[in-house]
Image 1: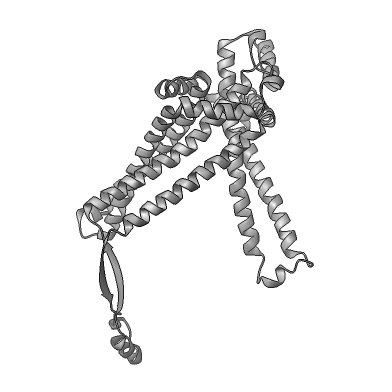
Image 2 (image 1 turned 120 degrees about the horizontal axis):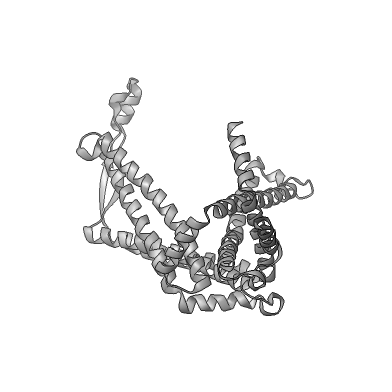
Length: 369
């Protein structure tokens, strides 16, 4: 009850911000409806990542083949058994021969370099898609005649603009995330070495393991903060066309000035998108259950249980819904940035806000008067 009371008080205190968040969700839906090709951006991201993953796996296999192969034997320990027959069986059982790979320091360094390239490229692909979506939504917002000037070709125009003018910004932001991720990977490697050593050495002590866990936790939190700041920096770059550092600075101060609005938008949009993901997953799973369990199909006759396939359908549908609804998540954040910039740069009839956002401005101005 105490938590419910706190949430109720917050909702009352932030009612204006929550109304603004609802307006951002509605305007994002209008923008996506006007530019349906923006839904293909996640598909392009997925295709780019698949191509990169295939190339990365090929190079990884070649790199793994450079190790020196050695064979070792494993014998069963019969001292842990009491049964005489089992002891005689294990003593007479031939040893199991298995292969191990030993890599030189040079190959190990190359492997770490490939892992860093994987982190950088994967975050780069995601960031390019975010920049394209942010620029398309920002273009829609700051256009007077949306019915005439905004269409599906706007997304492709924004894609070309990002590829020609903003790849450096995206690469720099991705580089910062990749550096944090490779540091986390190195610490994880040290943690595993410490666990292998156990309590025999200094690295195996409980204090060292606890310290490494604290570092891992802090770096995880720092990575989440940088991801959030990078996302807002890309939006600022899409609106104003500034460099990454300038956009990140402007995004940081915008977050400080509008903490209530951003918190409300994050809460409302997160709840709406979660309902959307859950609805898509439940409907898809229900259809799959009906098709599998239908008597005329005969599919259920070949299955011991339909729980496993329906669970798999639910997981896959939720994953796909999450990918495509990321467009709405990025669009809602972009609409909020555009609205704040619109509110700070223009007044009255000069504002670009329409629909729910315009009503919010008019109502807010009346309340102030």
